[in-house]
Length: 166
Image 1 (tube, one colour):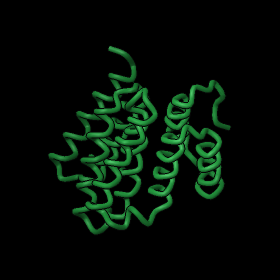
Image 2 (cartoon, helix red, strand yellow; image 1 turned 135 degrees about the vertical axis):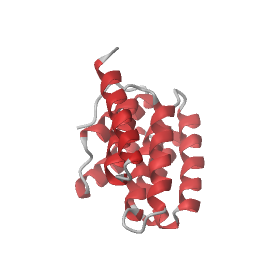
Image 3 (cartoon, one colour; image 1 turned 90 degrees about the horizontal axis):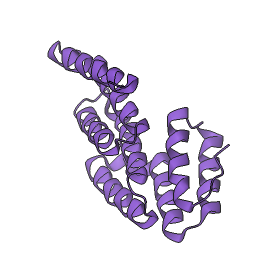
């Protein structure tokens, strides 16, 4: 078993345990780690399923409702990575964020939603400069974390360029 698989399995078991104990916040944190690891290992379908499930559950709880935005954002990033064709990646992400905004209307007012829309537009137009500029604009206000940077670098590969994000 690969180290990442072992971590994922351990976190999945911990999430199941915490759910059984009604410790939803701890279960959610473990599931998010599993989703993050799945995405890093390019298992995007698994990551998307986890992030969407966690987001939907968050919408049922007034205290965690606002966090759904972050979970939908993670799922959308994974959707962008889930195809080797720019137009397919853009279409998949656009269809997903339409569902997300139906589930959580406030999502469409977020910077994260706007970034995904801008990135899908850049992919459709094959405009790498637009892609980079929109990420830099976002990053200047809210720093992209290492996980997001890693995945956006994968999206950037759809533009057939070797250069990494700064």
